[in-house]
Image (cartoon, rainbow, N blue to C red; front, side, top):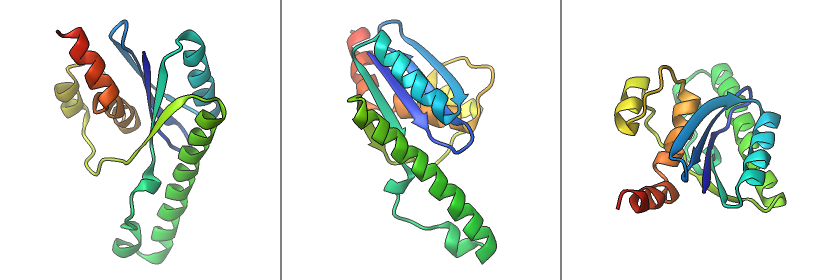
Amino acid sequence: MIIIGIDPDIDKSGIAVYNSDRGILNIDNQGFFDLLSEISWQRNQAYDVIVLIECGYLNKSNWHATKNKAKYAAAIGAKVGANHQISRLLVEFCEREMIDYREIQPKRKKINHNDFINVSGLDFKRTNQEQRDAAMLILNSNEYLIKKSKVNR
């Protein structure tokens, strides 16, 4: 099974790809069209693929409008809206290509590199927030936990 975690961003999205047969997790940042190519390529390599997409539109709050000045809040809102659109396009792509996917509500708390290494047990030299968020989608998923428990028995 291949599990793909994506933290969408308008510039470069975080992507993590976990191959459960090999027990290998890769992380990267990719532009939108590279993401689509990666998802298609992984699907062509393995029949059993699931894409976990962080979807900020599942959050009901509008936190940026209450804490900041109107101009700053509007700029944040525009960027958030663009990220939401990337999520929606990824969902639409998966539906069109009949690829299994899950829309995941973002976690409120972000973790730094050292905490990520401690939580994941992985040994990446450097990570950025988008990569960590994409990897955590996988590490917190039922699909990953079920596959890992079968391997560890």
